[in-house]
Amino acid sequence: MDDNKKVQNAIDKIKILSKKIGMDNNQEKTILNLEDTDNPERKLLTLQSGTWENDEPWFVIDKNGKIHTMLSLDTLLQLIKSLRIAQEENFNLKLEKSIWQNVPIDFQDVWIVAMDEIKKELAKSKDKKSFGIDIDKIVKDIKKKYPNLFLNLDRYLSQTNQEDII
Image (cartoon, rainbow, N blue to C red; front, top):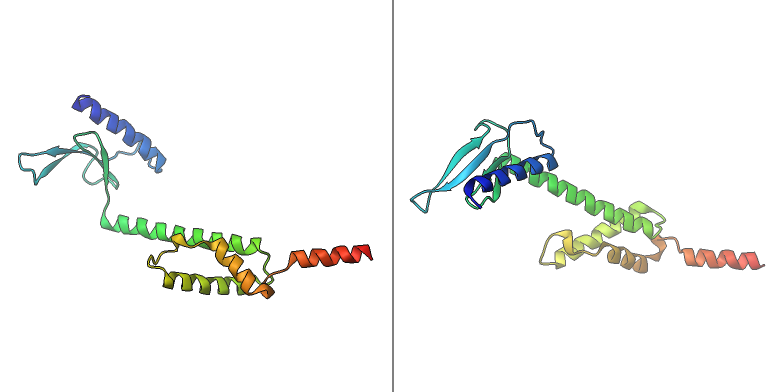
């Protein structure tokens, strides 16, 4: 494939990608070509379209037609912060769902015990992230260890059935 076709394919991909990430396709995008120079330690960025003042991300097309993006450090840090917040919210929702599925008597009490157990698990773990924690297992273990924190539906149903017989 010749260089012009690689660049055009990359530009078409950039249009599709831009739409997926919520950029207006009518909005001018900064697209740069990354070119080799005689010095292997240096590359040349050439403005393909857009302006150097356009908002981020900037799209960079290398000699193989591969697309790269450039972001400012502030934007990258904001992106990482947003991902961490989303990860925390996702973790909290999973924990909440697991607790509710086990029918707590007092949700807040179970939440506090669960968070203490999770902190203990993280302290034992070499990986200090919550990815490897089995939330459902922790809540089930809490239910076994502290059955008074949960409704025992089996016992309740068996008592109800006995009363129905009498």
